Image 1 (tube, helix red, strand yellow):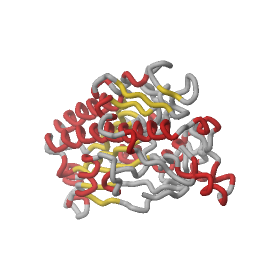
Image 2: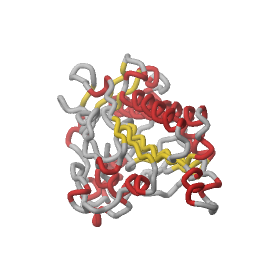
Image 3: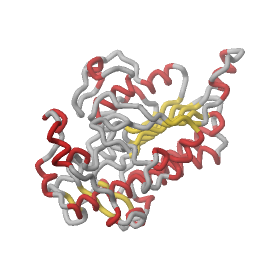
Length: 333
């Protein structure tokens, strides 16, 4: 694993059908045979995955996807912040071209006539649908809403909201009182997968895929935006028990490491992080890993449904994240 200021962001492509690489005889046939696209993005995920050689994180479904596709080892985000990175990816432009350098901005305000990725698919006759977080959302407060989404990019928008949307002080550990999304916070939930937002997101994706399978004459671009492992690190308790908290890796020598770093490199350091003891650091890492494994299980549900419906052979699957994430490297979280 890399302990750099800009951690690499993994992107996986798989199940690329032959029909997407060869010419077709007619426009009608092309519309019938064009590949579907399943675009999956995880929130605040770094490369702590089995397919990137992590010795502890359990991510069997994403690992399987990587084995069947192309794994990128040196892919970097354009901007180390959710909103600008997502808009850059979905608009195909650098942040200095989109004009978006903060989370709450919407690209239609700066480049109103620009086509987004999914809008381009719509213009070519694809059914374009979004479930969950593609553009920026405040987590958890915007869960269940459109957030800072672009309605023109989609034909269908679904915004599931599970039990992790309404957390209260006392349910969850947080370094800052009454703040769950913008600070380190975590919770081993007693509730089942299906009651959490990402579990509901997977359920909704299964529902959409079932309907797409009934109309195979029209290709689809289905975008799924999972919320985990974004803080608060919430996952059902069984996922926490997969990781021994005493064996969670801690970064050593941070004080010596940061001495030769410019101040800008430490710009995301927060005063509250000085409250972290080694025990709390290990609890935070355990919760982050548990959230990854929970999210991976939901990815597996969607991929299994794709296979079950006979859609996998003609579907390009993309898995990515919006940017990397520090777990104590350089003292950053």
